[in-house]
Image (cartoon, rainbow, N blue to C red; front, side, top):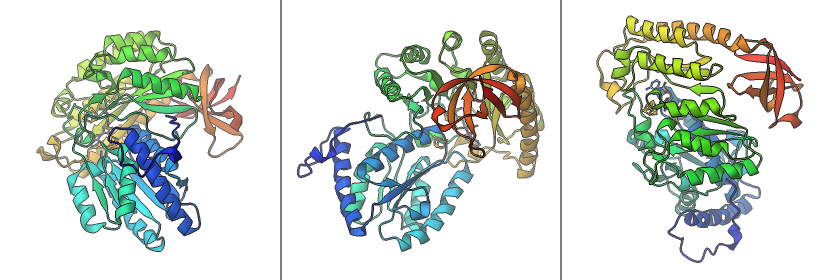
Length: 482
Ligand code: SAH
Ligand code: SF4
Ligand code: F3S
C-alpha cells in the first residue's frame, strides 16, 4: 500500500494520537528523527535487513516491516553481518524452524558486539510462544526488540520505545480483534503482491500451532480489500495472491457476511489485475459456489492448493480435519469435472501419532488417485500445547523417515508425468525474473503455477507473454516466446 504521509509535518511536541493508523504515523516520524540523529553520530546511513521464515503470510508481514523501516530512514542491506537493524520474522510451524532461529542468533551476538549501532528484533509466530520468550529473556539478553503477530502494526512505536529506553523491549499480545489498515509496506515484486483477506485460524487441526500463534479468525472488510487491490493495480501489479489460513471461510464474522466466492467476483472486476491466486483452501469448506466462480472466471488461475494432510479417514479424524478420504476424493472429482485443466497441489504430513502402515498406504492411494502437480511433504513435528503432542503412539523416527522417502518418490514420479502434459502447447506466462543461472533466459510462471525458462530480457519482467512449451524437465519447462 502506498501511503503518502508528510512525516516532517507531524508535530512531535504534541502527545501521540490514540487513533490508528495516525498513532503509527506519529511514531514513524519520531523514529525518523531518532534514526537521523544516530546516523549523523555514526557518520553514515544506517541499514536494515528483514529475514523471513515460514509462509506467505509472513512474507506479506515482512513487506509491512520493510515498509516501516524504509519510512523511518533505514537503507536496505543484503548481508546480515553488515546491517544495523536485523529483524527476524519467525515461523514455528515445525520444530526445526525454531532451531534455525536460535542457531543464527548465536552468530549474530558476535556481530553485534562489534557494531554499537546494531539492533536485533524478533517477531512473528515463534514469539507467540511463552517458553520462547522466557528463553530469550534468560539467555539472549542482547536482543533489542521482541513482539508477536498481533501487534506488528506497532513496529515503529516499539522501535521508538527501544531507542528511548536502552533496554530489551518485549510486547506480546495473546490475541486481537483489531485490523489496522493503511500502514506503509514495501513490495518485494513490482508486478505481483500478496493481499491478506483474513487473519488467524479457528480450525485447530490437532497437530497445528497456527491457531495458537495467529489467534482467532477475522476477515478484512471487502471494501478495504478491493481498495488495496485497486491501488496495487494502479501501481502496476498484475497478479495478486489472496492470503488466509482457510480462505474458504472468508467473510463469516463480518457485519454483512460475504462469501469467498462473492469476494472473488468483486476482485475479478478490478481493471489491470490479470491473475488471481489464493491460498490456502481447506477441503471441508470448499463450496460449489467457489467451483462455479472459478470455472467461469477469466482471471482466477488454474491452480488449487488443497492440503489433504493424510489419506486415512481414521488419521484425518484424529487430526481434526473434519473430512474423510471419500469426501476429499469426491471433491477433487467435482473440481476436475468442472475445470479439467485445473492443477492441484497439496500438503501431506507423515508420521502423525498412531499412523500405521495401512494408514500410510491410504495416503499413497490418494496421491495416486489425485495425481498432484506437486506436493509439500512434511515429517510430523510435535508442537507443545497442541492436542497431538500428548497423543500416544508417537511414531519412531526410522519408520517415519522410511515412509517419508517412499511418499516423496511417489509424489515426484507422478508430478513429473502430470507436469509434462502441457508440452507442445502455447501458454500465457507472467515473466517474473531473469534466470538465476543464465542471464539470456527469463523465468516465468504459467497460470497453473509451473515455471518456464525461455530466452528473454529484463524489460519483459512483469509482462504476460505467450510461450510455446518445448520440453518438460520434471518440474519446469524450457520454452520460447511466440
Ligand atoms: N492453513 C493451511 C496450512 C498452514 S501450515 C491449511 O490448513 O492448509 C502449512 C502446512 O504445514 C500444513 O498444511 C501442514 O501440512 C504442515 N504442518 C502444520 N503443522 C505441522 C506439524 N506439527 N508437523 C508437520 N507439518 C505440519
Ligand atoms: Fe493449521 Fe489447520 Fe488452521 Fe491450517 S486449518 S492453519 S493446518 S489449524
Ligand atoms: Fe509459520 Fe506462522 Fe506461517 S507458524 S507457517 S509463519 S502462520
